Length: 423
Image (cartoon, rainbow, N blue to C red):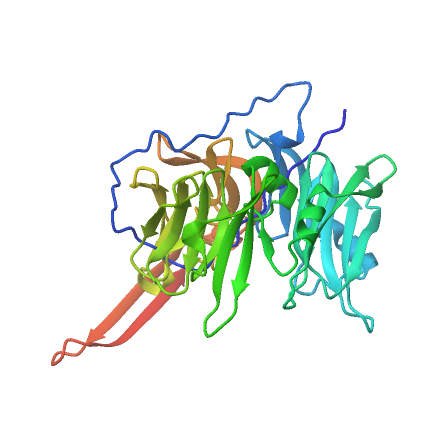
């Protein structure tokens, strides 16, 4: 029986820091994890029970709901394939997922007079590849998803009169062929030219968003001295406005069954506005400054992180969970930057929820690996899913010595020095 694989794309995280005004570290939230526990049969798995873990496009893992490895993708193993495809990999290649043993990738080709947006598939076992969809470069990809055994390609234009389309492909893995079929969502999109449909989450196609959330969000930009937005709810019964979200200065980040998540350009301390679609109330989640950043959300629950700046860039990162239904906040854990690992934010990078559990990239020994957070013990469980090895850690440790000179008259720091020694 064929196995189907679902991708959860790595959420783009802004380089930010955040602290919480109503910090309640000792408080636990008993009702935030409402995800249905998935059961895996030893004889059969479904697409909903498999996930793709990837953060930088170099190494990706297909895993089951318990994060056990099913398959692995390493870019270096397919470098020759991308060269054969004519892909310029000088600045890296971003893989959009590996589903049912097939790797998906899309890019815009500017080599001809008229640019083209091309979608490719690579058979992971045979390295055979095919261009299964191509369209004029006036279109841009807004999402690629593998849902219910089919590939969903969402595209849009960025002209004044926005157009959006969703293309659906049946995949025959044995013959490695792709057959396009009609999209249920396309009829909706055609009737909304000039307005934009937003997916529920990064990596969700429109069809998945509609099926799982029960509605789609329609966004209309009102240009003027300053851009404003109006939001409406689309269901099979038609379009209805969100009354509190008409001609507002809020831009949408995503939505769930009962909440919309929005932000704005005017409040430096705002992490997210959580708009309750049932009663129209808005719950604001605030931090302390503009470096605050959300990571992801469940229905009415927001995960975000704060950066505590330390000396010489050795920052600490604290991850919080905020329940906007009860206005309760919980600090989950704090991790530190590791010297010699560049800009990696362990405990933040790669953050995702699978089966109600948190999975992130963490540092063990001299390796970066996927890890599972144990909420009871407040520890990270190392998984056998390595991503990167930092060789300097094989040979020694880095010690720091710092010196700071302060003016005796005005108590101002006039110089700082740091010496790093590798032993």
